[in-house]
Image 1: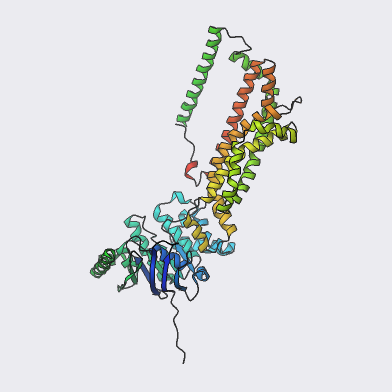
Image 2: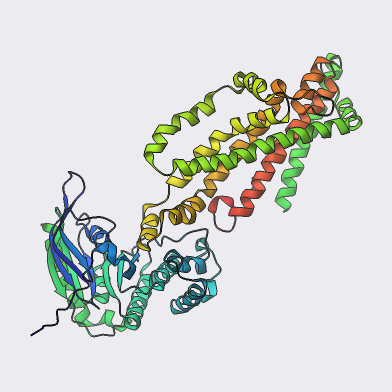
Length: 257
Length: 263
């Protein structure tokens, strides 16, 4: 008798990380993220949130334990992963269009596919009208859209986001939050999202992971059982407030650790 | 635009006042012409010996430009090697310092001995003297790429060649221009100094440096002044050429290269 074993998208077992002989950044992380989940990592600074993303992407190696992405080592799984950084990391010498095309270009996509896909994505994030502008001519929110378009151009199955909206004003942030959810509904990727904002974490996620510092460890995992699809109206709903309250409470406990 | 005209007008007014002061000094102190010629006689000599002046200008200009172009090509190539590892930089960087500190007048006689008097020697001197700032600035630009940018490239399986040519090199272009701006000034000085030691003395082959030596030995002070003026104009030409290129290549995307404002 065979049983279907569902391979998790991301799997951490007993992962520790320390740089050189310094203090441990992460200690004994066990975390499994299923396909299609939207998981936010939240915690006080110094709890190793960003390090978790670096480990999933294989940009840094664990000191102990194993990480599997779709059953593979992080480096082997890279083709299926896209990473969105806190700053938009656009190349200032390239136009918006050519910035979006960069990820495809690096992965060796042909010119035809690049142009077609780039046009699709510019449409998707609503930037067709600034396609030939340079990054310095754009607002912070628009730069971040370009960054998102570039990340999605390669059809990732896993999207890692490291405080992508931290530098934006609240209005742009809320709008981009809604857009991220719309894109996910269309494209069905799995997301791991690092943030400082409880409201953002709750609004976006299916699960919120609260980390505690010194050394970084999983303090609590809270499922967010709010209805999908989520719209801006949800932000003023009572159950949303309650959920934010719960996560905030856990976060305070984690900080007191 | 109006602002610029006013700025240019002010600069011209200063020039006129200087000429007037010059003339007044001549009148009051009765300086002999071989010590300090009048502005008028400098202007007249510039006109009558224009062909010789222009010839010398062109020769020195070619030498300085040749040296500068060579140092850009070689400097960028060396910087690309330096950018490969900290280890290489530590090993080789002291030698670029050497390039910067060796007095050009001390090695000019050697170059004269090896290469012989003429354009090749002078171009070589201009090249040596302008190389260090190009290497230093380009290397700085190549290695100062943000870590996240490199990570982005790695996440999309970029090869080391792609990181170098699609990320590091374009990122280094503004720094390269800082280097070229410094190098262009010293390339002109290098070419003129080089000519003092290793310039050709054949008729019609001497540049500004050689002509300056010749004019001073003949006490043709008015021509000497005209030559100094020509050397200054050459320096200006280089300065504006580099400014224009910098604006042309960077103005669309780089903050430092908006239309230069003269306040």
